[in-house]
Amino acid sequence: IHYAPVDTVEEVPDMIRRLQADSGFAQGIARAGQERMAQLDLHEVTHFCYSMLKGYAALQKFKPKRDPRGWEVNCEDDLTRHYDRGNYIK
Image 1: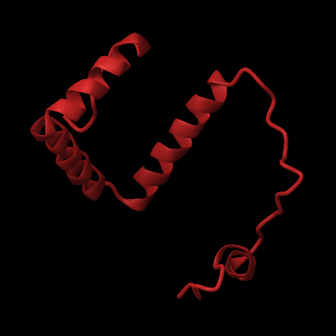
Image 2: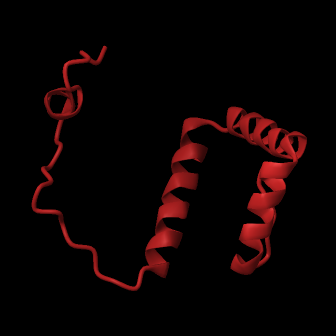
């Protein structure tokens, strides 16, 4: 099993407590998750991320608005200038 199984949102707090109390259980899930991700190719990871974001978007109860402090990133140069903060991305 590569995830912490819960059936309802009400079960999440108990699962968090179990993960915190049982490091063997938590580490087992983490290892299984790492092994599962290592089996996926780029297309499968991209599809998983796309599906997850689409699922979350369907649950939104508000219309997203662009933050006026944000900027559009179009190329690697933009990433370096705006996110590197002097660390010199390589």
